[in-house]
Image (cartoon, rainbow, N blue to C red; front, side):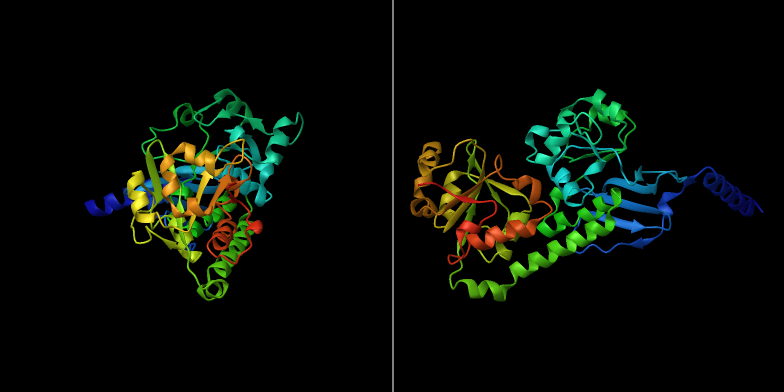
Length: 377
């Protein structure tokens, strides 16, 4: 009798919780949406609610759990964060996510942005300048946003990129506005990062458009990376070196990083291809010269008002002259102040892969590069 009483009490508690809209979310059931490449996100669609679980990319466990619930629906979970969808007044902190929303024709849902000065998106800048309907508000620096402006926007979500050991989000966490942690940049493959657009499509009510765009990205990516096509372009397999010295340290891409995999998919040789790191590897100048001094092509990012020359590069560090690519002038850089590199490549890795294929095959016309530019002699 005692056991029956206990079970009846538990049942009454569950029924009471359901009547109040509170759901025992640990027992949530639904259909898992199959993701082909993304490793740090799990999406389960229920009858009325979608559960999105972000895995912690820096360790074990869960980074965040979101419940995507239609506006007006009665749902109060026992854990995680409820996001009322579709989002209509979001604040976007990252240029890549603002660019994606433009690609998805969902930019009307951008009410505010942070780090506007780093966004090479003319349409966003134009709408910041507006004084009527359709205006986007500049919410200041992402590291110290204008809280009052965000409050005035009555935002329904804030999209930002999390960082390891960031210590939280300060005043933003006290606003009662859902913070969506956009951690796709921690994926170890370019397609894995791009596949997160399917999650963002769910947030903004354009799931079908997001799925269609990702299918296009995937199709174009594999059409470029097929080994049989690479073999017909050139008999020689070129080698490549990435990045340059930063404060006395050379951060090369690990073999399992998205850049390392892009190089492999483009048909290039890479000195650190067998390395198991999924991020960057800090090395000395001497270590890089010893391992990749004979690389055929050298690529890196550059931010400057003037076109980069070999003379400027040699002034930066005289040791660069020892690299084969320097001597032969096979140096290419992307000036992210002038081309929308960071705006586009996270969700259009096929466009970046195309540049890699061109760079790594001598018979490909270099004047058709989208992002990279050959250094001036």
